[in-house]
Image 1 (cartoon, rainbow, N blue to C red):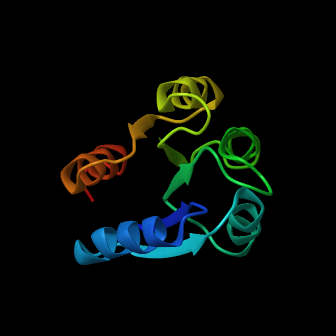
Image 2: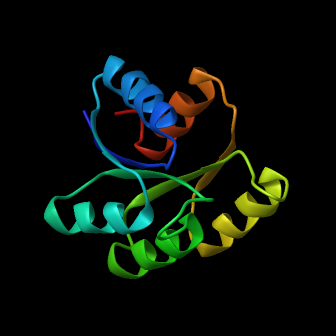
Length: 123
């Protein structure tokens, strides 16, 4: 199946998404912020990136923008539960920067898996 990189600063979210994706056969690597995620992208190829927006070190919008420049073919899903603003205030700009899908936290397992399958072409 696909190789997926998940970036989120909340450890339980990382583990939940990893478990969901591994249950359907995907390989998953994890990073706790955009800086770590970009470092992992330099070491191996990925088919899909799932990134949170509000994070320390390097936030999601900046990460998406850099990924788009360096890896224009990489599919991107942006996720956010918001911060000081509603999650839609963070997610709509993610589309502008290059995320193909946006998902508000909390999300259902099926919602995430459907987005992943759609972007990966049903892998």
